[in-house]
Length: 531
Image 1: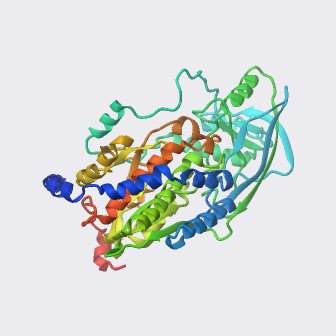
Image 2: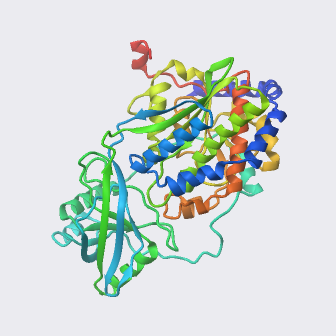
Image 3: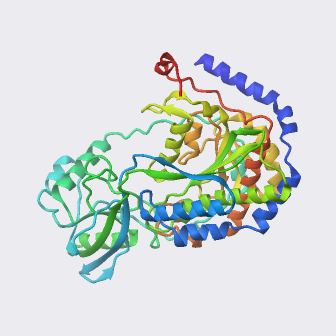
């Protein structure tokens, strides 16, 4: 441990001593930035791109035919813009896909009303229109579960209690203020992420679901811990064993209901008034190959063409809406970055020194699957515990990976992911965008998206700081994630700032500095490495 601390301190001291040198070589190119601003702010196409990805090609659940259609449109669009090596990177296995064809849920008694709810992805179809009574499963132990034996078949089972809903007296949407950004800028070096401790509750959860599968209710219904005014958040269904994406996995119909409707039904049951629901659910399992595809395209470099600057976002979404803030926004911005840079090259007559590579990932919503597969195929092999078994030659050729995946908010700066050596470099570049309020730099980590696949193997991977707007309380994985909740001006600003960052990374004499490299696993060294 002491040895590691000494090494890290030496790394930081070396980074600080090099600040003056880097500051000199990393001065922003004002001429190029002027061209980038023109095409990014005045002649933008990002809103048009976002519209196609959402209104026409949303939702884009991994493994679904709609994602395949979106992929075809993106490939053609990038090729029409003049990018090179436009192709897909196939990875897998992912498992079967799923597409919702038709769904309707009604309360038939004691008084009829249409119920606002959504099936969880990979829920199976039911035969025709089915009806049944509603039961609240009130159990916290195996003994209490046993009292429901033989009582749930064909019933609609509620899992959650009543949730109190408070009227909002403040807007959901917000931007970072000066105090927020100063706190980020002053954040200390981050600590590593820990592992989640599930505790004793996990065992009962497994018992609960096995009991439900034995009893075979018509559907299992929950409601969100957040969301109101008709906003519903949902993700994937739970299989009896394994994953719902597995071929032939047994999956019960599972629904998430709007909190207000869930509460009404719950209160009726508490009054001793029987409630009856009827449901129509038609869904189709898709993707017989079991694999998925990332989208890759390039702008060739010149004297340093064997080195690469990557930038990207995930293009897949959940199924409740059209996947606008999560993550057509990021995909449209990164596509726009590529378009802006192509226009900048044509107008300036300058070429990037390093090759620029755009990547749009799939399977992010199921655990960064597409980006992890790409990193594993090209840069470093990991074992089942996530330790590096072997670095591949191309690992040394990637200067950086830039990612965008936090909604529609404009870029306010960048997370360094615990890499202090890049701070003076990014400071020189982002200071050129003070007027666009995009110059905050924080040492902090941020998680949950595809830059982690690169950071995990020691490639500088970065996510941009974005204004939160109403991402978490209103649109993230919800039925409200539609084009209407994107902010065009924010998308333009983000594409402009990121295009400049990508360009300057490509033109820099040296690749971006890296964090200390993790040693390969001992067995890999014993085997002699190799590709």
